[in-house]
Image 1 (cartoon, helix red, strand yellow):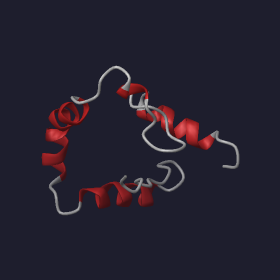
Image 2 (cartoon, helix red, strand yellow):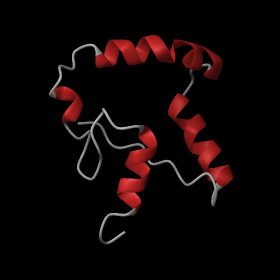
Image 3 (cartoon, helix red, strand yellow):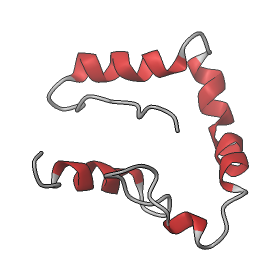
Image 4 (cartoon, one colour):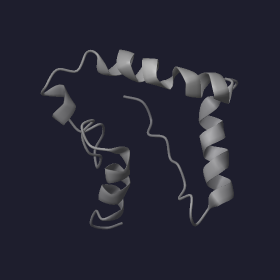
Amino acid sequence: MREPIVIPDATTEPDAYVAALLDTLGERDPIEVYAGTPEAAKRRCAPLDGAGWLVPLAPGQLASSMPPSCNRVAVRSSPGR
């Protein structure tokens, strides 16, 4: 399993948020990554069957079938956070 990518809150830490997003790119061109995102998402999601969409991505995360913004809400509202 890969390490989770930690992205700071864009509202409270805008500079850290931008830096973290750019850091995920490494040496890749941001425009090329953006342009290739739809195809990359299709390739990664192709193996998922109906049940695969319901499996949480990681402990404390929601399933792939949930919008990304739901993961942030779920993590923030978790006990102990």
